[in-house]
Length: 158
Ligand code: HEM
Ligand code: ISQ
Image 1 (cartoon, rainbow, N blue to C red):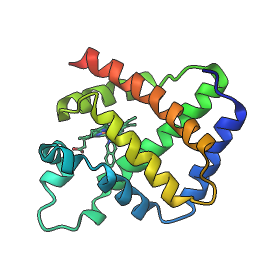
Image 2 (cartoon, rainbow, N blue to C red):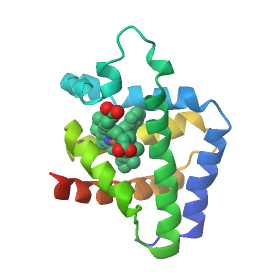
Image 3 (cartoon, rainbow, N blue to C red):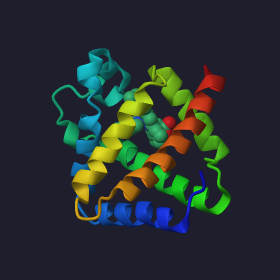
């Protein structure tokens, strides 16, 4: 499926609108929407910041926000690459690192679907006036291609 300039714009413009809001709370909402903790309570153990949080409020954990924002930023970059080259190539070093981190943490292929749903729901709630089926499809495609690249790298790292 080709990725058009219009599709890239749907992704980039909604992320711009989200960035103008409170990225901190968007990051938190995204994370807790995973729903993965209801589906798989054991998954909590995958995240070092949940393991060592102790009494510290999670809101203030720098890793949660940085990592959550990284997912949005990388999906945006993926949209731009899809439009330009029709293919997603994360920088080699970044991809290697991501493959290794996710394998080490015990992430499985099926988890990527959970995170995708959480991502799409978070965007829908953050920019309800912009949200359309076309926007959803554009983010989905950008995310799927990015996830495929990470999953591929996870197989090599396993
Ligand atoms: C860590 C991005 C999917 C669970 C990270 C980090 C980034 C990231 C940037 C920080 C560490 C590093 O840079 O190596 C992404 C992207 C994803 C994705 C772009 C999808 C396209 C997932 C999925 C899960 C997951 C599906 C499973 C629920 C984790 C865990 C860590 C991590 C457990 C380690 C956190 C910690 O202990 O500090 N991810 N991730 N990620 N990710 Fe993901
Ligand atoms: C790590 N990987 C994917 C998504 C995330 C969201 C919040 C915090 C960490 C994450």
